[in-house]
Image 1 (cartoon, helix red, strand yellow):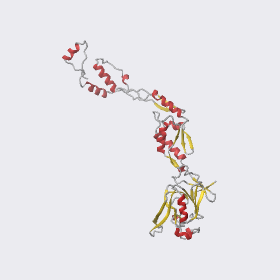
Image 2: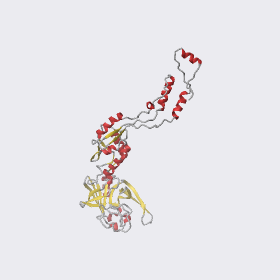
Image 3: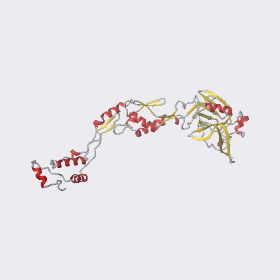
Image 4: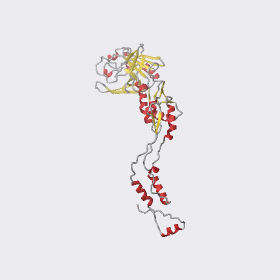
Length: 389
């Protein structure tokens, strides 16, 4: 490059008085020098490798930093400008003096490594009625290179815990009025489940707090109110006997005759495990007649629709039907023109009691084989359940 100095007679005369000549830099020298440095290709530049938290089979370890050969161009420029201004410019400069320094060193990670190793074998995640000690591998896989637990790294094994322990995927059991134990498929929202994303955020925060040892996951649902072994609160519908029972706290509060769906699979009151999806008073139930001869609209005083397997809204449920009072008690009424379009028709006085004692989410077990030989095809989820010991 051209001379970086501005030389004048006046400046030289002034400098001679001090027995030392310091030449002033040209105004554009720093900019020109910066352009030269930025465009210069230094040989074999390699980036630094920062120290990182890793692990072996037994514990967290640190992989030390490795110094690279990338040149800190600003540092080099500042040094050259200073030397030019002070007339201390050297013929050669060791490039190693200007290597980019590390962002993270082994020494900086040693305290974090110690804290992580103190967690091994001592961190417990709590679920309803369950405590799980996190494995070393689960902890190893959830930490970033700086030694911090990250929500996105926790998601895979929290998802595994959710599939293993959440009760919404597990079968539901109860004992019939006849003393027979039956097991049904869960509908898909009865019970509790782990909120995966919320749990990952919570767990990461608690794990990064070294004082936290027992950490509860975020649970959706009520483990106490919706147990898999149902013994206290439920409604039982016996299709074969055309009877229904309502239990609260294990006590039978209602026993009543009913009339279920017409003798056709399309209008059957389908066997299976359901829950009360909603509760309404004084509404009109309407729909299309399966015969194709128009529609219907029936006012009822009490309406409790079901949510069925697979979280299916079947549009069947329990309601009062006092215009059929003379047919209640006849177990063959559903085959004699009194059958419904799938709902459990119930005397008004009895359904009022069930309405009073039931709640949204309450289990409803429907069982019996009266529609197995009926014409047509089932158009709703059907589960006869399995008899168990």
